[in-house]
Structures are given as C-alpha cells and as structure tokens.
Image (cartoon, rainbow, N blue to C red):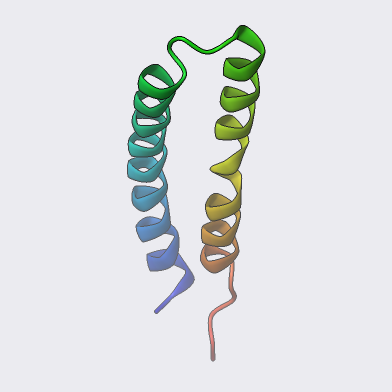
Amino acid sequence: MSQRVRKLIGTITMAIFVIVYALLAMLVGATMFAQAATWAQTIYYAIAGLIWVIPAGLLIRWMARPDHP
C-alpha cells in the first residue's frame, strides 16, 4: 500500500475516530460525573482530553511509513 493511500485512509479514520471519541467521552462524563465534585470532573476531562493522542500517534506513525520499493 502506498504512503498516499495510507494517508487518505488515515485521515478519514482519524476524523471519524476523533468525532466518535469526543462524543463518547462527553457521554461518559455527563452520565458518570454529572453529580461529582468539580475537581473530579476536571481530572476526568483532562485525562479524557489527552487519551486520544495515543491512538492518533500510532495512526500517524503508520501513515508516515515510507513506501517499500
């Protein structure tokens, strides 16, 4: 698979992933932490706001692999 095709697939996948992840993180936060203290909500949203970076980084690394000759 060429790098160009990987970038196309990765970009589409990343866009869908970020949207779905954000909606799920908001759903979990609104249902599980609605009555929690402000500090607990802050910690949850800080962690949830950073976790998506791990799969995004793996996907970007896959997209940036050089083509095999």
